[in-house]
Picture 1 (cartoon, rainbow, N blue to C red):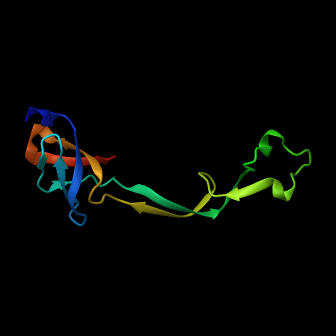
Picture 2 (cartoon, rainbow, N blue to C red):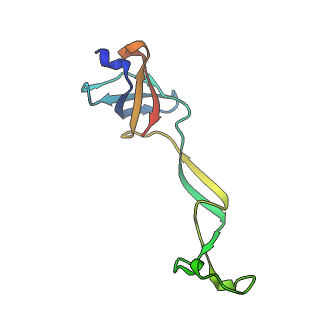
Picture 3 (cartoon, rainbow, N blue to C red):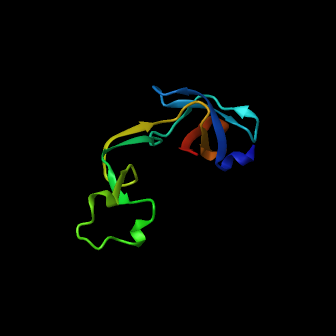
Length: 119
């Protein structure tokens, strides 16, 4: 099993969030690891609730023909949720059973696996 010197893709089959450990199925070897440590930085953003909506140009393409008035008329801009603005709440998630992950094996030892990333 000298291929364990390289990171392996796997699927989480069991998770103990309290102990920060997981069991991972490695399809390449058709085996499941024992309980291995999980990196603590594997949070990812699930949902953002905007405090103030973002003002953006009307999706009908009026940005190409801006109004001559300054400031523009009130109905010229449309409020939408987008990737800018003030966030009111951000929900974070972490790993769950079924997630695809990257596992490394310290010194190529099957008993020294670590989950280091989520796909």
